[in-house]
Length: 303
Image (cartoon, rainbow, N blue to C red; front, side, top):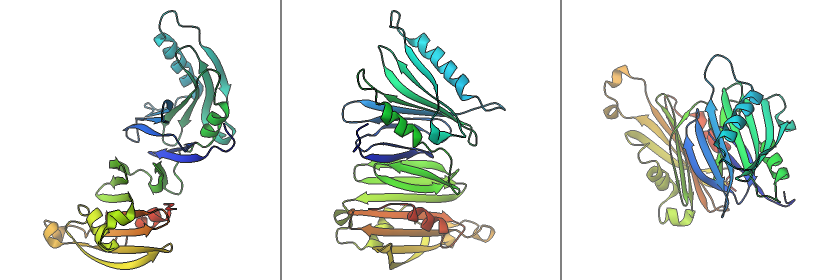
């Protein structure tokens, strides 16, 4: 790996690692239990990540999973393909204490440095492959990527990072929907009836237009704030202009309200002029001034 190569964090469903800054997701599929992520640069597929949740009573052993993977891969090779060269049994020092195996596969069709890891707590089987061409095996880069891998939540929060937006959301909450559009990123998480939504909008001055920050956050969360009697106020957050709003779900929006617990919306938005971006976090829960909004917002690096 080039000594000056800049790295960026990539995290999806709580599986996080570093990649070169010019690599970005080309495909995102699945959920926290099973899924696939493909990472590309301008010309090639550079990496693949697959994960699945182990069934049965016992958690499988990484080395046996590698045995099975190599056996199946060999069966899929075209007849007459050159024999594959394998380098197995390597460990990644940064992953000490977790069941894993790093190995390299070289053949005529493709060559890759691979890491297979079994996350005991979540029972997820995680397989990363960093592809390389003959004469440029990217061994140091693969070692850096593997060593940066994190698969366990920290203090009850799971890491998310994509297209330069990095934040933490409560572990165990499901990603209900995401919108990854040019200039606009939006994530909606759910757990039971509770919601947490995270938004980043680029080209802040253009997005705001003549609107105030308070007006923008009400517009950005128009669907999530519908039915709530919200009040808002201007504020400062981490040295940036900010707006906070929140309120209780109206009786009209709560059928049989006398038998239902009260519901509250809490939202925080700020304008980072240094990054020329708008950031916002919203929750819906049974807690007024939900502290999870502040905790999620605090995890965002805006500039």
